Image 1 (spheres, rainbow, N blue to C red):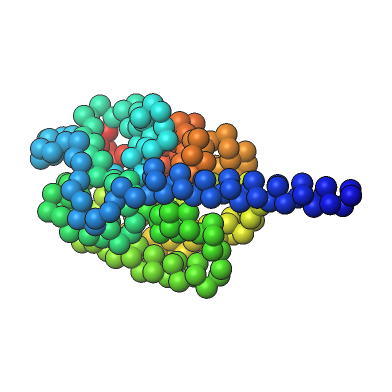
Image 2 (image 1 turned 90 degrees about the horizontal axis):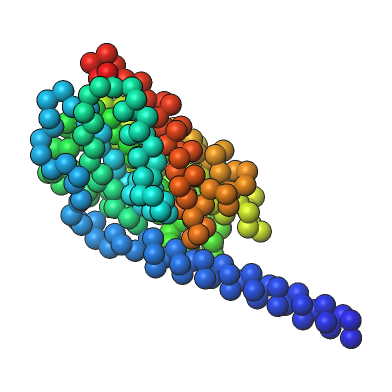
Amino acid sequence: MAKRIISIVVAICVATTMLWIFGLIVTIQDQFFYESSSSTKQIEVTNSNSKQKDALSIVALGDSLTRGTGDETGKGYVGHVMDELKKRTDKQIQFTNLAIKGQRSAQLIEQLKQKEVQRQIIEADIILMTIGGNDLFRGGEALRDLSTTQIEKEKKKFIEQLNTIFLLIREMNEDAPVFYIALYNPFNDLDNGKETSAIVRNWNYAASEVAAQYKSIICVPTYDLFELQVNDYLYTDKFHPNKEGYKRIGERVAALITLTEGEK
C-alpha cells in the first residue's frame, strides 16, 4: 500500500513538472517569440530624421531583449546604457531602436538590407545588439529536444548568419563599436539546468570567436550575471530579464563603452 502511494505521489510530481514546462513553453511562444513573423517587417524608428550635427548616435538591433521585454519600467538594458552615457557626455544622444520582438538571425540579415536601417547604421557612433536567443531556444522547442545533434546544427547555422550580420554591419560602418550582448541561461534552475548551461556557454564561445574576427566588435558576457539566483533577475515569464536583470546588463555594457574625445 505504501509503495502504491509513493508511486502515485511521484507520478503526480512528474506530471506537474511536465505541465509546468509545457505551460512555460506556450507562454514564451505566445508572448515573446512569434511577433516577428516576417523577415521584412518594417522597423520602428525613434528618430527618423538624419543625424543631428554633433549628436551621439546610438543604434540598437536585435530581438525582444533589446526591446526591453519584461521590464515594467520600459527602460531595458538600453535605457541604463543611455543613462550612464548621459553622465559622460554633454552631447545630445540620438537613439534609434530597430529591434523586433521574436527576431532571429536570418530575419536580422533581411532587416539589414532595408535602406532606412542601412542609413541608421551608417550614421551610428555606437551599435548595440542582441540576437541568438530565439535561434537557440526556438520558441521553447529546445526544452523538448536537447540532443547534441540538433543543438550543433542550430549553432552552426547561427554562427554562419552571425558572421554575415557582422560583415554587413562593417560594410556599412567600419568604425562604430558594436556591442553584441551574449546569452544568459534562464533555465539553469530546472532539472536539466546543467545541460542548458553547457549549451549556452558553448553557444556564447562560438559567437565570441566570430566577433573576435572583426574590428571593434565586442562580445559582452551576461551568463555570470544570472548564474546565481537566476529567478531574482527574471520577469514572470521566467525567460526575459526583469528591471533588475536589465540593469545589470546595462551597467556591464556601459562600463565597456569608451567615448573618444570627439564624442565627449
